[in-house]
Image (cartoon, protein in one colour):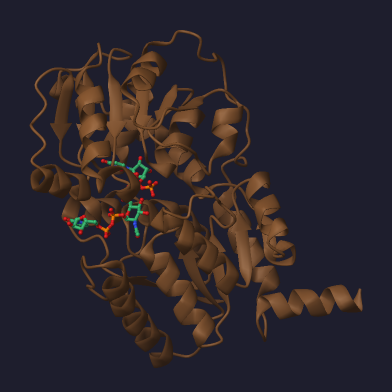
Length: 372
Ligand code: UD1
Ligand code: UDP
């Protein structure tokens, strides 16, 4: 098969790594299009350097802009790439960013088969740009590769069951493959003056949290007031908003550092007493490691993490953040395997192989159901 993979943002580089590995192991040809949505070295290059992701064949360099402007630049660039070569067997997109939306839409408009990895997630909060991107990508794509049973059920409710395949979560593949490296990083905690189990790891970057000055002010004040050291690798969106809203630098618990590479981040997650975040990926990573996660959102698409007790939704309420961080009644033991078994990469390749062929995958599925 010939695959064109569209990537652009930090979590997508991470999610794609196990699929790239499995595609190359099976002898398939993959061409990566990097939209350039994320471009700082610590938001992009670092992941290509430390994870097994092939170097991009095409760099669109779209950079930062408004949603419409950024997505339009991507659409133009992706379409040009797709038209310049023989039609691929699949256009592969990941997650819920503007790069996901642009890849799925460009493929659909050219009548090319598209597959969406991490399909079926829903927060049911349409004020999040990610929710719009997911819904459009799922409804454009022909093959919907779901990380969880709940995601597949969401798609069934939207009439998309026949395109859905339950494959597990590729972020679990990555975490398992990098755990030994993260455990061996014995310089990360001393460098930051942290003790194992004695700190909270925080991240905050969602537009829904940080683009509202009042919400961002409340989060920063709540983190700074916690009773244990809090390390915050700062996303560039948040850095820009802190400066433009004139939010003062923290002076108590909070230590701000630059964004980290994947392995250093995993090392900090592994040894954290608590994780406090509005990230999608980090909620799952915390749960898989058995580290209690306090989520700075009113809802989550990763409902399993909450149902199993490893994640508490506290929004940006300072009292609820503190109570959840200080609570002692978190679960213990090993979280159940609700995200697959760490082999989502090969399962995705198998799903692509079995659904490949002439015509959109969704039509083929309908035809085979009709003939069966
Ligand atoms: C994007 C995704 C979000 C995802 C996040 C992962 C969309 C709509 N949002 O949000 O779903 O959770 O990536 O991290 O696609 N910037 C830099 N350097 C960079 C990249 C960004 O300075 O390398 C700054 C710019 O000021 C830019 C801002 O960050 O305007 C936001 O970047 P953008 O890619 O638009 O959205 P993210 O917040 O990164
Ligand atoms: N991550 C990282 N360095 C950081 C912050 C996050 O490597 O400084 C990783 C994190 O471990 C996870 C992914 O980036 O694998 C999550 O990305 P992000 O939170 O930016 O996006 P989201 O998951 O919310 O879309």
